[in-house]
Amino acid sequence: MTLSWGTYRFLENSLVDLLNTTLVSGGILDEQGNQIVARVGRKEDNNWVLPCISVYLDSVSSPKEFVGSNTTLDVNLMIIDIHATNEGERLDLANFVYSTIRDGFRFYSYTYSASSPATPTAVAGRWIHVNFISNTRVALGQNVEYEDAHRHRISINCDINGT
Image (cartoon, rainbow, N blue to C red; front, side, top):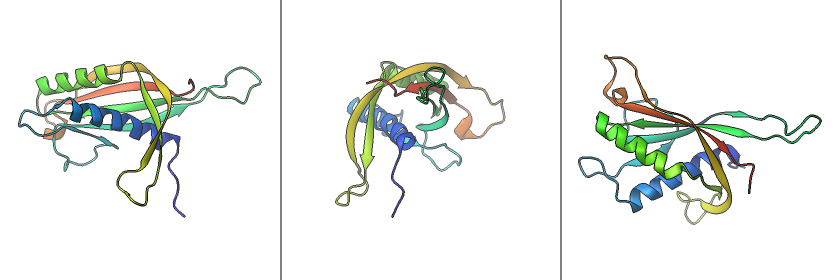
């Protein structure tokens, strides 16, 4: 038996699906005419094609709803890293991501589909409220790898407690 996806993976993939759907439907391409893609996970190597957007869950805080309650109000810190090829592209992609997610996005539950293993079945759930924490250039100095020379990070808190 394989481990089923849970809330955290649902959240990451819901955000990536929204970004990729919007990138493709909007015809948003890089300067060479290639499709820009969003991916789940940290970019920890340099074999990804730039530009790219990576999304991952960083941490979860779970304060109690009120004293004496076991109900928690989970808030999920999501990191969106943009790896661009130049400063203009970095700014344009940061603006694209901000505009795409600022009103929130739909949370989906995913289940494995034997007939289409690469495309799990998605079931729409509640809406996710987005609160921006930061939206800034990542300054790593002057002598950095090409993949990190034009990096941008957007940090958001995602609240899926509502309806």
